[in-house]
Image 1 (cartoon, rainbow, N blue to C red):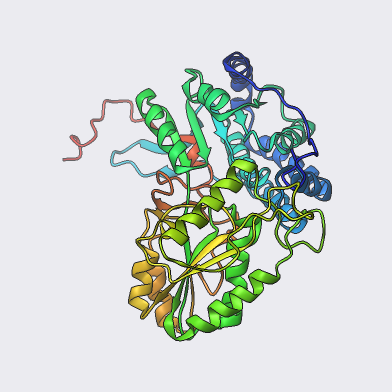
Image 2: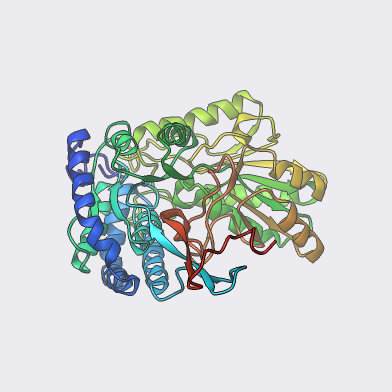
Length: 471
């Protein structure tokens, strides 16, 4: 259903079970041998054609995405553009080195490495970036030579279908990518459990990630996790306050705060606290909330009713913790908003690190202002959560900026920019409870989906013993 209008049924999709998953894996296993033998440049041509088709259909896909998951049209267009960029980037990897030549310690012997595909891999993706995140996983998995079983979030099945249709139209052989709809605990659980699936790539909540990691550990499957965040923007007293507020507004309320990189903490030095807080409050109160299909709307709905209620429950937590509610904090249920899942942009202040609203991922349009006295305290606050995905600092002091780059505990650091806006040519992922160390995109995009094979060729005509004959 359209989260901006619950009476608008976007589509009907199968609630797949283990039997459907078995069929998908069987198709992938059948297609895999021929696909793994397909030269990487040829794989790249198919991915490049897919990127071209996404480019042709960008506006159409953006409108579909807005209707299916709610983000405003400009953001939906950016989501599709990210998939286009990823396709073009990964396609180029088909003509880049897949290994390296390494000197041997022995005469008349050479050694080198190359990448091998893993086999059939499972990709489980969330609803908040329903075309971009599948592209981060499926394109590199294909370039590495794997066959894929793709299980998208149950809230965004139609975007996933259109993405897979593009791959088929681009010339991807049947069975190389297989789409399975359904609920996470049913279709997703069956995908994790299936003995024919050798690796799982999952983006979603830390709670589900722990379950998948534990099960994959028991089954000795490769698993890559990109989980939650409790991201912060640090604003020092020498910052450009207008710029910092503009960045905070975009990072806190873009996609209705439903991003793993959303800025749900704003750590502000006391000397500029009042100016920053009042300007952000004013901007938040003026934001137009409604259907993302309206070009005048700045923030769309929350994905579903359950999440809407969860977001509001955190407002109640913040009030109970004695944080000051500056603005928002309520479900929008007037005549203009009653048919959708709309929440007012919400700002708390007087928040301290021990509060739950400063520690737990809310995944909604709520942010918390945390006053600090010094740069050192700001860094301490920024690092005070279990997550470590994206942190940012606004300052004109180059010394502070470089110290922050070193001291901030996160996979991504921004200087004079908000916590969102990663580009596909750099690695994406985090530290601590944000995941298990893997990175998506960037120069290591294939690492998640390939195995290294070391090869030695001895042409001496005699037995040579490494570490012995050279001693």
